Image (cartoon, rainbow over all chains, first blue to last red; front, side, top):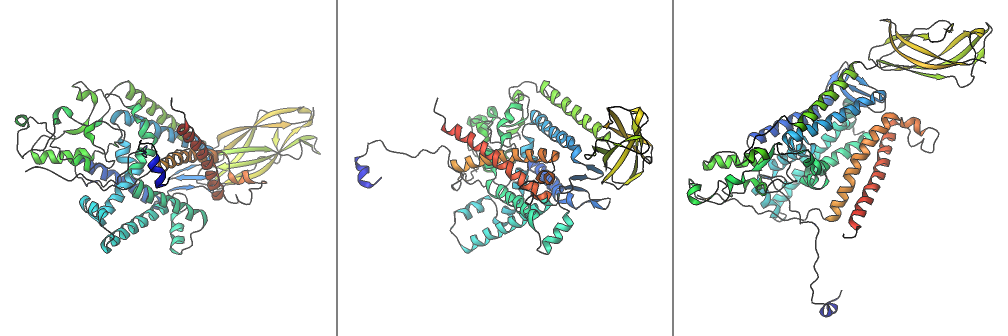
Length: 466
Length: 94
């Protein structure tokens, strides 16, 4: 539209309406107290595990290694094969149920203390604070022009962030590729193909998520943030501002008696807003943006101590407690989640203990249905794949069940199968001609020679002329 | 003494609507594709799957198979998510 057009246009002013509020970069103020200490412990414990575990060894190999090319997962003494996929499903179900249970009990504990988004953002904030200074300095720096000082600080921050992200990427890939060789390759500048790609992918995601996207991820991308309220009830621990006690809020001289001034306990210092990583005001009530990090509790407690009021104006409490009623920890919802959790946990542990330590695949020879031998016998040929899931080598043998007169040609051999390996072989099974007509099903039983124990039985079809 | 601290923030441009839509499409589809990849490749071995097909040369190693599988799944989950967002956005006002 040109200027002349505009003069003739209708008097109604056109306005661009944005569907979303303009985002403002949040500079959370640093906070100290009980809950921030708890989060620091959680960060060290969780990230400590993440960065350390790939370096642990067990039995001469990496203790935890998800060896994708070999399709084997090593978790200390346990080796999981694709056949054990059910245990991965079990673990996912268990994690999902735990999330439900803890959310019902104590709200968004996951978000505040354990979510990778929170944990890595916290570490990135430490680095930011270390290089750029506290909140006021960071805001000043943001507003300042591009002075050499600002350039130096920004370059330093991003360099540290990128280095840390790359290390994170390498540690992540170290769960899938032996980390010793990986580091060796990195040192020689010879990381190739997929390991390099996934290092950059995971490292890049860390850099973007923890450095830039931060609370936006929780606000716009996280499905859990949207549906967690379905697990809440009036007995769930939430972080709330005690409106009855705090209002009417207002600044006051130190030592002023709120009752005489006609004020509540909230001194309206807004520190609770400044420390909030998602930039909300907890005094407006429970909001879905709240990740329950409890930074506002620590901040408010500190201020209450300073002005000499009792702590807990912002605190962990339940809706029932706020209404002056009793809080029930044991209630339908938590009991159902807890018993489901226990049941599934036990079922999985029992399954793991009774897991088959070997596997047997039987494939009928495709070339011929059967063969008549010189000894007047009917012969079928089978291809066997014996899988030793344990890490020690074992010797196996085979027995036939369910088919009379059947015998393995030459007797059952004893196969030595190395730990964690597959052994492929062929056997011939013979039955005297007069003893069998048409097809019959037999069972091949795999026996552990050292213990003489039957490990498992697999069915196979024996075919003879009618 | 009154307790007063600055509450002002530096306004800066954040994610606009397109940015948020992109995030809302990419992230759930990423999660779905990740789970899909795990389940699928726990059952099927990519190298055996590729045998005798036009993809045999590309899926020459397990790592290539897993990665290509993941991006293949992600492409289609992204398409589904994008269509959903598009339908929601273009729905006539009730």
